[in-house]
Length: 208
View 1 (cartoon, helix red, strand yellow):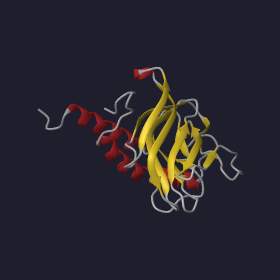
View 2 (view 1 turned 90 degrees about the vertical axis):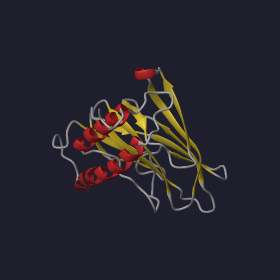
View 3 (view 1 turned 180 degrees about the vertical axis):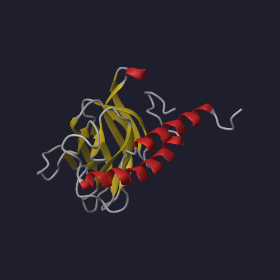
View 4 (view 1 turned 45 degrees about the vertical axis):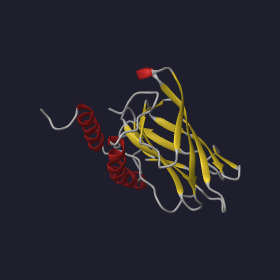
């Protein structure tokens, strides 16, 4: 009999599959980014991938205490890496069980200081090719709000990802995107260990 329980073997198989695909979210720590973003910026349609949402705390003298992410249509979230210590996660979804569709995710209770990112990770699968646009609302400890929902040229652009049929097809992939995908494998290793430690969707499908 194997020394590892069935749930551990199932999670190990999922991690191995994701590493083979080689696509994952880029783990972001330390200095905050200029804008809210979802990584990797380029994905493959129909593939389960690890994504990272990073939201910068740019305001001096305040902390980020709440993040609300609206999930774009066609992106099916499977499960979540447990949020950082102090943060609580709640979901708004339609349906239940295997047919559940997550429409909105809210993280509360944290206190991300100025100059750092609030970072959350999740496994998701885009259904088809195209540009997927997220909208994110950030609340500060002083009550001020930043809506990351504008155009790419605005002061608070909405995070987007580009989903392609394959990495080698169509108009090609930029060097920056390829580098992000390679670095994403490192993010997958870090996120994979967190996934293996537990933390499913709560009311939705478990991680195993």
